[in-house]
Image (cartoon, helix red, strand yellow):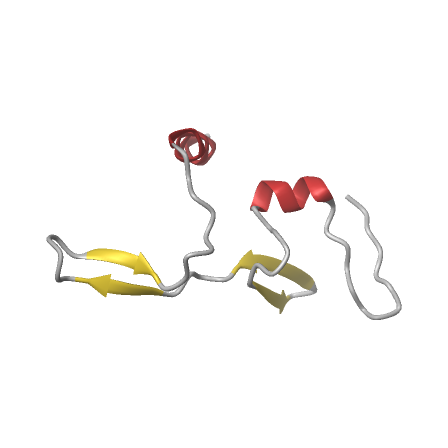
Length: 82
């Protein structure tokens, strides 16, 4: 998909791409320039390791993460297997 850069240096990421990546306003991303390519990746989520309440589990430090439904997980698994 073709897009443009505005006078302030901002790039518009087309809606279809934003939706497929789960990009929303305020979402942290990493931007990397390598070998002439600009890559946009979701920034890793900061987590803590909870070892006090049963088996160890990762707990996100932020509550503003989108929830995942069973269908979301199934779709990602199927897309990864292709």
